[in-house]
Image (cartoon, rainbow, N blue to C red; front, side, top):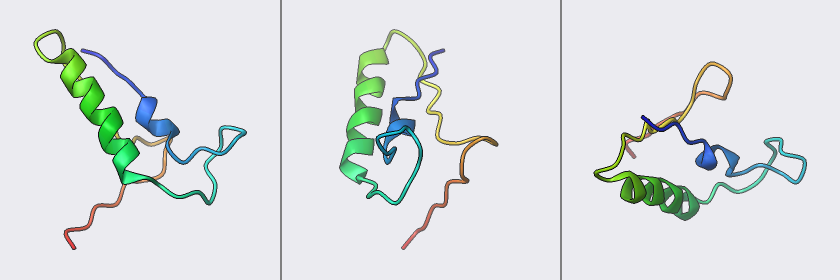
Length: 62
């Protein structure tokens, strides 16, 4: 199993902290697709999205 956190850096400012920056969905999709494709048949991607140390992810069906 592979835990990768590359996508957690989306929206980080220059000092590595979350700020008022635009979240780019395309960037998120690119990173997640890269890891899924690279690990296909080789390992299991944990698909880490959030935990108790990060803001809670909110999903909308709209």
